[in-house]
Length: 310
Length: 136
Image (cartoon, each protein chain N blue to C red):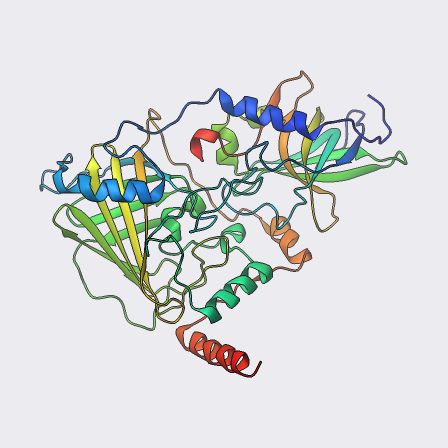
Protein backbone atom coordinates (compact mmCIF):
# COMPACT_ATOMS: atom_id res chain seq x y z
CA UNK A 1 0.00 0.00 0.00
CA UNK A 2 1.49 3.29 -1.01
CA UNK A 3 1.53 6.27 1.31
CA UNK A 4 0.70 8.63 -1.48
CA UNK A 5 -2.72 9.52 -2.69
CA UNK A 6 -3.64 7.85 -5.87
CA UNK A 7 -6.75 7.53 -7.85
CA UNK A 8 -8.04 4.28 -6.60
CA UNK A 9 -9.11 1.81 -9.17
CA UNK A 10 -11.92 0.92 -6.91
CA UNK A 11 -14.90 0.23 -8.97
CA UNK A 12 -18.22 1.56 -7.87
CA UNK A 13 -19.73 -1.58 -9.30
CA UNK A 14 -17.61 -3.71 -7.00
CA UNK A 15 -18.76 -1.75 -4.00
CA UNK A 16 -22.36 -2.10 -5.03
CA UNK A 17 -21.97 -5.78 -5.75
CA UNK A 18 -20.68 -6.17 -2.23
CA UNK A 19 -23.84 -4.61 -0.89
CA UNK A 20 -25.98 -6.90 -2.93
CA UNK A 21 -24.04 -9.92 -1.73
CA UNK A 22 -24.41 -8.81 1.85
CA UNK A 23 -28.13 -8.46 1.45
CA UNK A 24 -28.76 -11.68 -0.39
CA UNK A 25 -28.05 -13.88 2.59
CA UNK A 26 -30.50 -12.18 4.90
CA UNK A 27 -33.96 -13.55 5.56
CA UNK A 28 -37.11 -11.56 6.08
CA UNK A 29 -37.79 -10.78 9.70
CA UNK A 30 -41.55 -10.58 9.68
CA UNK A 31 -44.43 -13.00 9.26
CA UNK A 32 -45.27 -13.35 5.59
CA UNK A 33 -48.07 -15.89 6.02
CA UNK A 34 -51.09 -13.61 5.98
CA UNK A 35 -54.63 -13.51 4.68
CA UNK A 36 -53.37 -10.41 2.82
CA UNK A 37 -49.73 -11.16 1.93
CA UNK A 38 -49.33 -8.46 -0.73
CA UNK A 39 -47.59 -5.29 0.52
CA UNK A 40 -48.49 -3.12 -2.48
CA UNK A 41 -50.63 -0.68 -0.61
CA UNK A 42 -53.78 -0.43 -2.69
CA UNK A 43 -53.89 -4.22 -3.05
CA UNK A 44 -53.29 -4.76 0.65
CA UNK A 45 -55.88 -2.17 1.62
CA UNK A 46 -58.61 -3.68 -0.53
CA UNK A 47 -57.82 -7.17 0.75
CA UNK A 48 -57.69 -6.00 4.38
CA UNK A 49 -61.08 -4.31 4.21
CA UNK A 50 -62.60 -7.63 3.18
CA UNK A 51 -60.55 -9.69 5.64
CA UNK A 52 -61.59 -7.45 8.55
CA UNK A 53 -65.20 -8.51 8.07
CA UNK A 54 -64.44 -12.08 9.11
CA UNK A 55 -61.26 -11.80 11.17
CA UNK A 56 -61.21 -13.22 14.67
CA UNK A 57 -57.95 -11.92 16.16
CA UNK A 58 -56.36 -13.04 19.43
CA UNK A 59 -57.93 -11.16 22.29
CA UNK A 60 -57.09 -9.62 25.66
CA UNK A 61 -58.99 -10.72 28.75
CA UNK A 62 -61.29 -7.74 28.22
CA UNK A 63 -62.18 -9.10 24.79
CA UNK A 64 -60.34 -6.43 22.80
CA UNK A 65 -58.00 -7.52 19.98
CA UNK A 66 -54.53 -8.21 21.38
CA UNK A 67 -51.95 -6.15 19.47
CA UNK A 68 -49.15 -6.61 21.99
CA UNK A 69 -45.89 -7.41 20.28
CA UNK A 70 -43.13 -6.29 17.92
CA UNK A 71 -44.29 -5.14 14.50
CA UNK A 72 -42.66 -4.18 11.21
CA UNK A 73 -44.20 -1.47 9.08
CA UNK A 74 -44.33 -2.50 5.44
CA UNK A 75 -44.06 0.88 3.76
CA UNK A 76 -41.50 3.42 2.61
CA UNK A 77 -43.95 6.28 3.02
CA UNK A 78 -41.41 8.34 4.93
CA UNK A 79 -39.65 8.83 1.61
CA UNK A 80 -42.82 9.79 -0.22
CA UNK A 81 -46.49 9.11 0.39
CA UNK A 82 -46.93 8.70 -3.33
CA UNK A 83 -45.47 6.04 -5.59
CA UNK A 84 -41.76 6.61 -6.05
CA UNK A 85 -38.95 4.65 -7.68
CA UNK A 86 -36.12 2.82 -6.04
CA UNK A 87 -32.94 4.87 -6.22
CA UNK A 88 -29.69 5.07 -4.30
CA UNK A 89 -31.46 7.41 -1.88
CA UNK A 90 -34.88 5.75 -1.72
CA UNK A 91 -36.19 2.24 -1.18
CA UNK A 92 -39.08 2.95 -3.54
CA UNK A 93 -42.68 1.87 -3.04
CA UNK A 94 -46.22 2.09 -4.27
CA UNK A 95 -48.37 4.97 -3.05
CA UNK A 96 -49.75 4.55 0.47
CA UNK A 97 -52.59 6.91 -0.44
CA UNK A 98 -55.68 4.75 -0.81
CA UNK A 99 -58.23 7.55 -0.77
CA UNK A 100 -58.37 9.21 -3.22
CA UNK A 101 -57.96 5.97 -5.15
CA UNK A 102 -55.59 7.48 -7.72
CA UNK A 103 -52.91 7.47 -5.01
CA UNK A 104 -52.18 11.18 -5.40
CA UNK A 105 -52.15 13.44 -2.36
CA UNK A 106 -54.89 16.06 -2.93
CA UNK A 107 -52.71 19.04 -2.20
CA UNK A 108 -53.86 22.59 -3.00
CA UNK A 109 -51.87 24.45 -5.69
CA UNK A 110 -50.38 27.01 -3.29
CA UNK A 111 -49.37 24.21 -0.94
CA UNK A 112 -47.77 22.23 -3.76
CA UNK A 113 -45.62 25.28 -4.47
CA UNK A 114 -44.81 25.47 -0.76
CA UNK A 115 -44.01 21.75 -0.68
CA UNK A 116 -41.52 22.14 -3.50
CA UNK A 117 -39.94 25.07 -1.68
CA UNK A 118 -39.82 23.05 1.54
CA UNK A 119 -37.88 20.31 -0.17
CA UNK A 120 -35.34 22.76 -1.59
CA UNK A 121 -34.98 24.93 1.48
CA UNK A 122 -35.26 22.82 4.59
CA UNK A 123 -33.66 19.76 6.06
CA UNK A 124 -36.09 17.01 7.00
CA UNK A 125 -36.79 17.35 10.69
CA UNK A 126 -35.97 13.71 11.37
CA UNK A 127 -32.40 14.25 10.21
CA UNK A 128 -31.84 16.74 13.02
CA UNK A 129 -33.42 14.57 15.68
CA UNK A 130 -36.83 16.19 15.94
CA UNK A 131 -39.88 14.08 16.71
CA UNK A 132 -41.82 12.93 13.68
CA UNK A 133 -45.39 13.98 14.31
CA UNK A 134 -48.52 11.97 13.53
CA UNK A 135 -48.83 10.02 11.31
CA UNK A 136 -45.16 10.05 10.19
CA UNK A 137 -44.05 8.66 13.55
CA UNK A 138 -45.94 5.47 12.62
CA UNK A 139 -43.81 4.84 9.51
CA UNK A 140 -40.58 6.79 9.95
CA UNK A 141 -38.79 3.92 11.60
CA UNK A 142 -39.16 0.25 10.75
CA UNK A 143 -39.90 -1.56 14.00
CA UNK A 144 -42.45 -0.81 16.69
CA UNK A 145 -43.57 -2.30 19.95
CA UNK A 146 -47.27 -2.04 20.72
CA UNK A 147 -48.44 -2.58 24.29
CA UNK A 148 -51.94 -2.22 25.59
CA UNK A 149 -54.23 -2.60 28.53
CA UNK A 150 -57.79 -1.48 29.07
CA UNK A 151 -56.69 2.09 29.88
CA UNK A 152 -53.82 2.84 27.51
CA UNK A 153 -52.29 1.93 24.16
CA UNK A 154 -48.51 2.37 23.98
CA UNK A 155 -46.55 2.82 20.77
CA UNK A 156 -42.83 2.54 21.27
CA UNK A 157 -40.31 3.09 18.49
CA UNK A 158 -36.57 3.38 18.40
CA UNK A 159 -36.37 6.55 16.35
CA UNK A 160 -35.40 9.30 18.78
CA UNK A 161 -36.64 6.96 21.53
CA UNK A 162 -40.09 8.26 20.71
CA UNK A 163 -43.18 6.89 22.35
CA UNK A 164 -46.89 7.55 22.37
CA UNK A 165 -48.92 6.84 25.49
CA UNK A 166 -52.52 7.03 24.32
CA UNK A 167 -55.35 7.14 26.86
CA UNK A 168 -58.29 4.97 25.87
CA UNK A 169 -60.92 7.15 27.43
CA UNK A 170 -62.15 9.38 24.59
CA UNK A 171 -61.44 12.44 26.71
CA UNK A 172 -61.52 15.85 24.98
CA UNK A 173 -58.28 17.09 23.42
CA UNK A 174 -56.09 19.37 25.49
CA UNK A 175 -56.53 23.11 25.14
CA UNK A 176 -55.58 24.99 21.99
CA UNK A 177 -52.72 26.69 23.78
CA UNK A 178 -50.79 23.42 23.76
CA UNK A 179 -49.00 22.42 20.61
CA UNK A 180 -46.87 19.26 20.72
CA UNK A 181 -44.55 17.53 18.25
CA UNK A 182 -46.71 14.39 18.27
CA UNK A 183 -49.88 16.22 19.22
CA UNK A 184 -52.49 14.98 21.66
CA UNK A 185 -53.80 11.50 20.92
CA UNK A 186 -56.89 9.91 22.42
CA UNK A 187 -58.11 6.39 21.67
CA UNK A 188 -61.27 4.35 21.65
CA UNK A 189 -62.56 1.11 20.15
CA UNK A 190 -65.04 0.87 17.32
CA UNK A 191 -65.82 -2.84 17.36
CA UNK A 192 -62.48 -4.60 16.84
CA UNK A 193 -60.80 -1.49 15.41
CA UNK A 194 -58.60 0.72 17.56
CA UNK A 195 -59.25 4.35 16.64
CA UNK A 196 -56.80 7.08 17.66
CA UNK A 197 -57.74 10.72 17.25
CA UNK A 198 -54.89 13.26 17.19
CA UNK A 199 -54.92 17.07 17.26
CA UNK A 200 -52.77 19.84 18.77
CA UNK A 201 -49.67 19.15 16.67
CA UNK A 202 -47.09 21.92 16.36
CA UNK A 203 -46.83 21.13 12.63
CA UNK A 204 -43.05 21.34 12.57
CA UNK A 205 -42.96 17.78 11.23
CA UNK A 206 -43.67 16.77 7.65
CA UNK A 207 -45.50 13.76 6.27
CA UNK A 208 -42.55 12.62 4.17
CA UNK A 209 -39.17 13.59 2.79
CA UNK A 210 -40.83 15.28 -0.16
CA UNK A 211 -41.80 18.21 2.04
CA UNK A 212 -45.51 17.41 2.40
CA UNK A 213 -46.71 19.37 5.38
CA UNK A 214 -49.73 20.23 7.48
CA UNK A 215 -50.69 23.01 9.84
CA UNK A 216 -51.35 23.10 13.56
CA UNK A 217 -55.06 22.81 12.74
CA UNK A 218 -54.67 19.35 11.21
CA UNK A 219 -56.78 16.50 12.51
CA UNK A 220 -55.61 12.91 12.15
CA UNK A 221 -57.64 9.73 12.72
CA UNK A 222 -55.76 6.44 12.76
CA UNK A 223 -57.39 3.02 12.60
CA UNK A 224 -55.69 -0.26 13.60
CA UNK A 225 -57.48 -3.48 12.65
CA UNK A 226 -56.03 -6.98 13.08
CA UNK A 227 -56.96 -8.99 10.02
CA UNK A 228 -55.23 -12.13 11.28
CA UNK A 229 -52.95 -13.07 14.17
CA UNK A 230 -49.88 -11.43 12.62
CA UNK A 231 -51.15 -8.58 10.42
CA UNK A 232 -52.53 -5.16 11.30
CA UNK A 233 -54.31 -3.03 8.74
CA UNK A 234 -53.23 0.52 9.52
CA UNK A 235 -55.08 3.51 8.12
CA UNK A 236 -54.58 7.22 8.82
CA UNK A 237 -56.84 9.97 7.56
CA UNK A 238 -55.48 13.50 7.62
CA UNK A 239 -57.83 16.44 7.40
CA UNK A 240 -56.30 19.89 6.99
CA UNK A 241 -58.38 22.20 4.77
CA UNK A 242 -55.58 24.77 4.87
CA UNK A 243 -53.32 22.56 2.78
CA UNK A 244 -55.38 19.83 1.11
CA UNK A 245 -58.52 19.91 -1.01
CA UNK A 246 -60.08 17.30 1.26
CA UNK A 247 -59.25 14.56 3.75
CA UNK A 248 -57.07 11.80 2.42
CA UNK A 249 -56.24 8.35 3.76
CA UNK A 250 -53.06 6.32 3.74
CA UNK A 251 -52.91 2.59 4.49
CA UNK A 252 -50.29 -0.10 4.91
CA UNK A 253 -49.55 -3.31 6.81
CA UNK A 254 -47.80 -3.91 10.07
CA UNK A 255 -46.54 -7.48 10.11
CA UNK A 256 -45.42 -9.27 13.26
CA UNK A 257 -41.67 -9.54 13.74
CA UNK A 258 -40.17 -13.02 13.70
CA UNK A 259 -36.95 -12.00 15.45
CA UNK A 260 -36.80 -14.04 18.65
CA UNK A 261 -36.33 -11.93 21.75
CA UNK A 262 -36.24 -8.66 19.83
CA UNK A 263 -35.70 -5.70 22.12
CA UNK A 264 -35.94 -2.02 21.36
CA UNK A 265 -32.77 -0.15 22.30
CA UNK A 266 -32.42 3.37 23.61
CA UNK A 267 -31.84 5.75 20.69
CA UNK A 268 -31.06 9.02 22.37
CA UNK A 269 -31.19 11.25 19.37
CA UNK A 270 -29.40 13.63 19.95
CA UNK A 271 -25.97 12.61 21.14
CA UNK A 272 -23.82 15.51 19.99
CA UNK A 273 -25.20 15.50 16.47
CA UNK A 274 -24.05 19.03 15.75
CA UNK A 275 -21.39 18.03 13.23
CA UNK A 276 -23.96 16.13 11.16
CA UNK A 277 -26.44 18.98 11.41
CA UNK A 278 -23.78 21.39 10.16
CA UNK A 279 -23.42 19.35 6.95
CA UNK A 280 -26.94 20.48 6.03
CA UNK A 281 -26.46 24.07 7.08
CA UNK A 282 -23.23 24.31 5.08
CA UNK A 283 -24.97 23.43 1.83
CA UNK A 284 -27.78 25.88 2.40
CA UNK A 285 -30.58 24.01 4.10
CA UNK A 286 -32.52 25.61 6.94
CA UNK A 287 -34.70 24.29 9.72
CA UNK A 288 -38.39 24.21 8.83
CA UNK A 289 -40.19 26.77 10.99
CA UNK A 290 -43.73 25.28 10.71
CA UNK A 291 -46.74 26.96 9.12
CA UNK A 292 -49.73 27.66 11.30
CA UNK A 293 -53.27 27.58 9.96
CA UNK A 294 -53.38 31.38 10.03
CA UNK A 295 -50.07 31.65 8.16
CA UNK A 296 -51.29 29.08 5.63
CA UNK A 297 -54.35 31.17 4.82
CA UNK A 298 -52.18 34.25 4.31
CA UNK A 299 -49.74 32.32 2.13
CA UNK A 300 -52.60 30.91 0.09
CA UNK A 301 -54.12 34.37 -0.46
CA UNK A 302 -50.74 35.79 -1.48
CA UNK A 303 -50.10 32.90 -3.85
CA UNK A 304 -53.52 33.27 -5.49
CA UNK A 305 -53.01 37.03 -5.88
CA UNK A 306 -49.65 36.47 -7.50
CA UNK A 307 -51.09 33.86 -9.84
CA UNK A 308 -53.95 36.19 -10.80
CA UNK A 309 -51.53 39.00 -11.66
CA UNK A 310 -49.18 36.92 -13.77
CA UNK B 1 -8.50 11.70 20.48
CA UNK B 2 -5.33 9.66 20.47
CA UNK B 3 -2.20 10.12 18.48
CA UNK B 4 -1.68 8.07 15.44
CA UNK B 5 0.17 4.88 16.18
CA UNK B 6 0.64 3.35 12.80
CA UNK B 7 1.34 4.47 9.32
CA UNK B 8 -1.77 5.47 7.55
CA UNK B 9 -2.05 5.43 3.88
CA UNK B 10 -3.73 6.58 1.02
CA UNK B 11 -6.39 7.04 -1.11
CA UNK B 12 -8.19 8.45 -3.86
CA UNK B 13 -11.53 9.55 -4.88
CA UNK B 14 -13.16 7.85 -7.76
CA UNK B 15 -15.72 9.96 -9.43
CA UNK B 16 -18.12 7.99 -11.44
CA UNK B 17 -21.73 7.72 -12.27
CA UNK B 18 -23.41 5.15 -10.12
CA UNK B 19 -26.06 3.04 -11.72
CA UNK B 20 -29.17 3.84 -9.78
CA UNK B 21 -30.65 0.43 -10.23
CA UNK B 22 -27.59 -1.46 -9.20
CA UNK B 23 -27.58 -1.18 -5.46
CA UNK B 24 -29.76 -0.65 -2.46
CA UNK B 25 -30.20 2.78 -0.89
CA UNK B 26 -27.58 3.68 1.65
CA UNK B 27 -30.05 5.03 4.13
CA UNK B 28 -33.63 4.42 5.03
CA UNK B 29 -34.41 7.17 7.46
CA UNK B 30 -33.52 10.42 5.87
CA UNK B 31 -32.12 11.52 2.61
CA UNK B 32 -28.39 11.08 2.25
CA UNK B 33 -28.35 13.15 -0.93
CA UNK B 34 -28.81 16.41 0.97
CA UNK B 35 -25.43 16.05 2.65
CA UNK B 36 -23.44 13.76 0.40
CA UNK B 37 -22.66 13.49 -3.29
CA UNK B 38 -24.30 10.23 -4.28
CA UNK B 39 -22.71 10.23 -7.72
CA UNK B 40 -19.19 9.95 -6.36
CA UNK B 41 -17.57 7.07 -4.56
CA UNK B 42 -14.56 7.73 -2.37
CA UNK B 43 -12.15 5.29 -0.82
CA UNK B 44 -10.03 6.11 2.20
CA UNK B 45 -7.32 4.11 3.91
CA UNK B 46 -6.26 5.38 7.27
CA UNK B 47 -5.62 4.77 10.92
CA UNK B 48 -8.48 5.00 13.36
CA UNK B 49 -7.94 7.82 15.83
CA UNK B 50 -11.40 7.92 17.36
CA UNK B 51 -14.72 6.10 17.31
CA UNK B 52 -17.88 7.88 18.37
CA UNK B 53 -20.19 4.94 19.01
CA UNK B 54 -23.49 6.71 19.41
CA UNK B 55 -26.94 7.57 18.11
CA UNK B 56 -28.35 8.73 15.84
CA UNK B 57 -25.13 8.36 13.85
CA UNK B 58 -21.81 6.79 14.73
CA UNK B 59 -18.61 8.47 13.55
CA UNK B 60 -15.20 7.06 12.78
CA UNK B 61 -12.24 9.45 12.74
CA UNK B 62 -9.42 8.48 10.42
CA UNK B 63 -5.98 9.93 9.87
CA UNK B 64 -5.25 9.77 6.16
CA UNK B 65 -2.09 10.83 4.37
CA UNK B 66 -2.75 13.16 1.49
CA UNK B 67 -0.89 13.54 -1.79
CA UNK B 68 1.62 15.88 -0.18
CA UNK B 69 2.41 13.47 2.61
CA UNK B 70 0.45 15.47 5.12
CA UNK B 71 -1.83 13.69 7.55
CA UNK B 72 -5.42 14.84 7.40
CA UNK B 73 -8.29 14.03 9.69
CA UNK B 74 -11.41 12.58 8.01
CA UNK B 75 -14.74 11.84 9.64
CA UNK B 76 -16.80 8.90 8.47
CA UNK B 77 -20.52 8.94 9.24
CA UNK B 78 -22.51 5.77 9.72
CA UNK B 79 -26.00 4.94 10.84
CA UNK B 80 -27.04 4.66 14.44
CA UNK B 81 -25.01 2.67 16.92
CA UNK B 82 -28.15 0.56 17.29
CA UNK B 83 -28.28 -0.31 13.60
CA UNK B 84 -24.55 -1.07 13.51
CA UNK B 85 -24.96 -3.35 16.51
CA UNK B 86 -27.80 -5.22 14.84
CA UNK B 87 -25.70 -5.65 11.71
CA UNK B 88 -23.05 -7.31 13.82
CA UNK B 89 -20.68 -4.40 14.31
CA UNK B 90 -19.04 -4.00 17.70
CA UNK B 91 -16.76 -1.17 18.88
CA UNK B 92 -14.06 -3.80 19.37
CA UNK B 93 -13.96 -4.29 15.58
CA UNK B 94 -12.56 -0.79 15.25
CA UNK B 95 -9.71 -0.37 17.74
CA UNK B 96 -7.78 2.89 17.88
CA UNK B 97 -4.70 2.70 15.71
CA UNK B 98 -5.89 -0.03 13.39
CA UNK B 99 -5.78 0.54 9.65
CA UNK B 100 -9.08 0.31 7.80
CA UNK B 101 -10.33 0.92 4.28
CA UNK B 102 -13.56 2.86 3.99
CA UNK B 103 -15.82 3.18 0.96
CA UNK B 104 -18.39 5.95 0.99
CA UNK B 105 -19.78 9.16 -0.42
CA UNK B 106 -18.03 12.53 -0.05
CA UNK B 107 -19.71 15.49 1.64
CA UNK B 108 -21.30 18.10 -0.59
CA UNK B 109 -19.93 20.95 1.53
CA UNK B 110 -16.32 20.02 0.71
CA UNK B 111 -15.41 19.09 4.24
CA UNK B 112 -13.36 15.98 4.90
CA UNK B 113 -16.35 13.91 5.84
CA UNK B 114 -17.78 10.83 4.19
CA UNK B 115 -20.98 8.86 4.36
CA UNK B 116 -19.54 5.45 5.13
CA UNK B 117 -20.97 2.44 3.35
CA UNK B 118 -18.44 -0.29 3.93
CA UNK B 119 -15.38 -0.77 6.11
CA UNK B 120 -12.72 -3.36 5.38
CA UNK B 121 -10.70 -4.34 8.43
CA UNK B 122 -6.99 -5.07 8.38
CA UNK B 123 -7.71 -8.81 8.38
CA UNK B 124 -9.91 -8.51 5.31
CA UNK B 125 -13.28 -8.79 7.02
CA UNK B 126 -15.84 -6.33 5.71
CA UNK B 127 -18.47 -4.49 7.71
CA UNK B 128 -21.43 -3.14 5.82
CA UNK B 129 -23.57 -0.23 6.67
CA UNK B 130 -27.02 0.45 5.36
CA UNK B 131 -30.34 -0.80 6.51
CA UNK B 132 -30.52 -4.55 6.18
CA UNK B 133 -32.66 -5.50 3.19
CA UNK B 134 -35.02 -7.46 5.42
CA UNK B 135 -35.57 -4.39 7.57
CA UNK B 136 -36.37 -1.99 4.80
